[in-house]
Length: 444
Ligand code: FCB
Image (cartoon, rainbow, N blue to C red):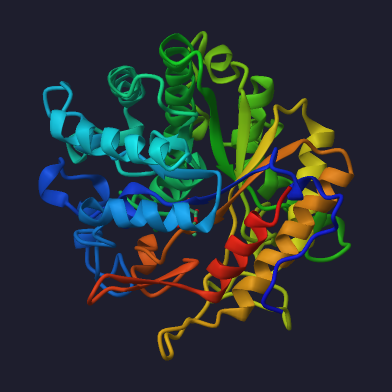
């Protein structure tokens, strides 16, 4: 299979449905000398934090190559580009705007406009200025107000050139991976810290939404969550309960407060010191109406009871895995969308990330990543199936435009539809990129 196909009647084949590609600042930009140091610069220096001991100092050198990269996007024929702003590139230590940093993003916006590409900006894709991390990071309630101030300044500076804003990308990863199990920056391992960080991130989202409503009435505003549908590993009641608890603590922990204004009931089972520090008015701020909800989907999660009232995750045996060790499970995307649609009154949904890490080889100037094409094919079909079951999905973004710094896994994993040779920074569109381009161009 080297083509992507869907039924002619599919909503994904209409031009009304948005197709795009996604990246994030720390993963591609490089250019560390022209911004403030961030939490990931620091985390990468910790021994064994990153599997290949690399960092984002150069990454894809997008800071210098952004014009070519936007040409690449335009040549794909997609409608939109989802990228993030590095907070420490646009805001100085004293809280004022960094003109040079603002110009970098304004130039990107101008070029996107010239190419007729819609800008989908993420305001926070995990790169927190280090001086704010030093002041407690997301454990400090004040960080949420600093985020609001940054959003206020940058959205005014960018005028209304931005089609769509996301306040945060995957607060689960910032809070849980960063402060609860410590595999992401800043590397803290503490239940209470994870829960506190999550609450302050949600608060930051709410404060930023107020600013976006005021400053950017013409842009769409929302948030992006990563979600994996949770399945019990067996029919045993203990495993069913474990899967529900995992879902509540890991995924609904974000969706439910945003969409209904309260945390899942699992909040009652947390020790008192780990209960989120909710102040008066917080939940109303957090649950303001969204123009859309962005969902990042990669795989499902299967849980068993751990015998102590908790849960452990296990990847089923004998299933197809990506290079991340994640199960290829497209049905999970349909299940997730249908389940969310039953649980909540949802705004329109966007799939803001979906893709696969594959062991790619550049042979004679080509990358024949058939497994990635298959992944896109089955997952686009999964989105189509969810739409057929009544879910309002309006867009799909491939992760990622190009190979990049995959966080704690450094440059060892490749997610791009474009291959990046990190020695020369040469970009080569993979077979999946060609298939994606052909599919989006065939829409009517
Ligand atoms: C998501 C992140 C993104 C990328 C993919 C593989 O969790 O948002 O930056 O690393 O996973």
